[in-house]
Image 1 (tube, one colour):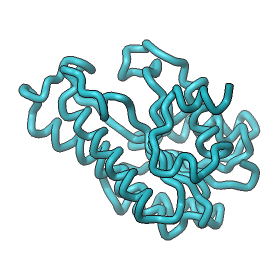
Image 2 (image 1 turned 180 degrees about the vertical axis):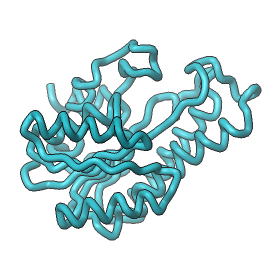
Image 3 (image 1 turned 60 degrees about the vertical axis):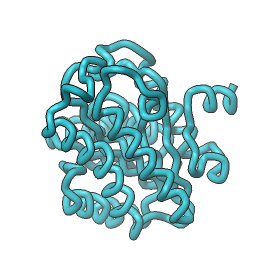
Image 4 (image 1 turned 30 degrees about the horizontal axis):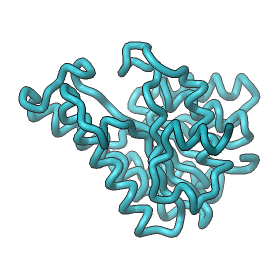
Length: 230
């Protein structure tokens, strides 16, 4: 990934933070964003302290003008954007305990606005700056495809995010893939699941090593990753 520029949204913690470190370790210049400017600045500081190259920018994916500025900043620094990881997301409530029948309108709206429209804005605003052989990765999970009680509008928003990714895959020349890492040890899962550093290797494989035609318009899940790398 030497000489490449990667943009990672939702990079202040969890999967996004780990992916940013993994990309930097592979030689990429990483532009990281999150709503919490101080937290994402700390991530960029840590990457630089490890000898990597990173820029932090506060951005809210619900605001397309924030995202536009983010992508323009990344392009100013690296020319074209080689990799975009649309990772920013929210969950309102306790995972598994938010049935759709009891969901508030505000939670429904913000799940869709952040988790689905945010993916749309991230990809759309990246397009003017995306390298011809660039790749876009959208973070998701099985709950988007396999319904489970209690995940309500969060699951709905992830299904919508995957649909956004698949339609972009049909509409643009660059590869667009959904990455489903399975259960990951984050705040969303109460710390239960795979380590984020291990998960980041799956994203790095999809961003660097996988054949772009093989992942374009697909879900790169844990089984696919293991089959191709073990």
